[in-house]
Length: 97
Image (tube, rainbow, N blue to C red):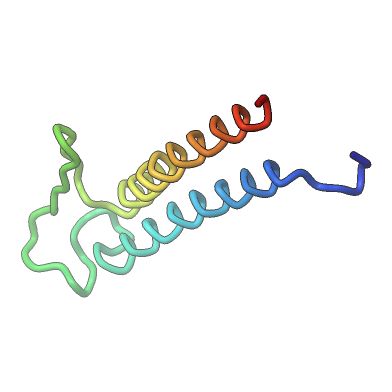
């Protein structure tokens, strides 16, 4: 393979990283729109003055822009990462046969 060619695996990994980063940015922007940028419940869609809490299994966290960004990053990263890892594993085994 010459230097000017790009492997398909590299392109897929860059697409994966782009999707994960986009999910993180969208989560943060959604948090700013819904909960305001002050870290507390102050956005236009908030009802009441108490902080909203989110749960993922046993993990409980306050819904802030940063937490929503991290949630988007981790959830999309794990969900796409498991599928991508499975595809790469099958691809390596198919090439070996």
